[in-house]
Structure formats: C-alpha cells, structure tokens
Amino acid sequence: QVQLVEAGGGLVQPGGSLRLSCESSGRIFSIYAMGWYRQAPGKERELVATVDNSRNTNYADSVKGRFTISRDNAKNMVYLQMNSLKPEDTAVYYCNAKGLIDLTKYDYWGQGTQVTVSS
Image (cartoon, rainbow, N blue to C red; front, side, top):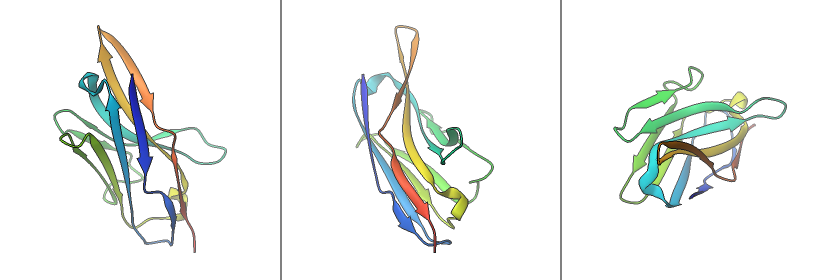
C-alpha cells in the first residue's frame, strides 16, 4: 500500500498562484508515476498533470504553460505549482500514485485538497 497526503489548497484570487504538495509513504518503491487530478462539482475527475520515474511530464491542455509538476524523490514528494489561476481551476485536487507490484498495477489516491479561485 501507498499512502498519499496532500497539502496547500485554499482560496486565491484570479491570476494568483498556489503550490500543492503531496507526500507519499509506504511501498513507495513500487511507484512508477505520480500525478494530480481534479474534480469540479458536477464534473468527472480529470487529469491535470503527471510525472514518471524518468521525469517525463504530461499536462492537460487547459493547464499547459500555467501549471508545473515536479518530484523530489529524496523527500518522497510531488508538487504542483499553479500560476495564473482561473475560476475554472476551482476543484478538489487529488494526488495520485501508480504502482506496479508483481505485474499488477495499482492506483493510489490522496484525500484531496480544495482549491477555490474567486474574487
């Protein structure tokens, strides 16, 4: 099992910035990719950004150029720097880790952190 704990959400004005963090623990040796997803009220959960063990990154089109995902493997942390925030970025943001154990893939999720972009 892998445990994920997010931090850093809050209320910010449009155009502002926030930095989300996610600390992983447990069977972290099994993790091959980490990422951030978000879910707005009445909508499905969607991918925001991912980073794999080779530090290859992938971003949703809606956040490209504004958000940056990064990992600090020494601290078992993954971050999401969010700049130029828009009201449509308002959502619960979830940290995700993808693990591989004995050829079986697992998805692990944090509890979520609320991000609200409003004036």
